[in-house]
Length: 117
Image (cartoon, rainbow, N blue to C red; front, side):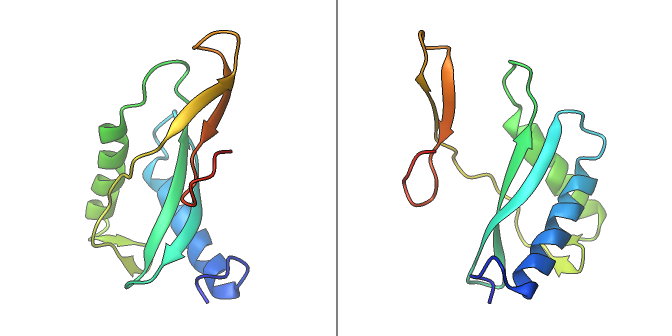
């Protein structure tokens, strides 16, 4: 059921996680959104994509994750009604394509299935 992104359970759980993550970053002006991209087997393992506005500066990834970890800790290890055992960042592969110089172009990211888009 959690493998079907249109199932009521998936939609309810994804919505709750996205709301909680928005609350964690409420005071961070660079935070734009969080989107649950998948759930995996396990207790419940959620893949969440988060978007930050960086205005040309490098994103402090460690600080961004620490914000979520601190929020979870302040809530007694919970996001909504879920107990969180771990918050971690995974590697993101990104590239610029089609630009006239190395610093121009369309930003593409690599999805879990290996495709770029």
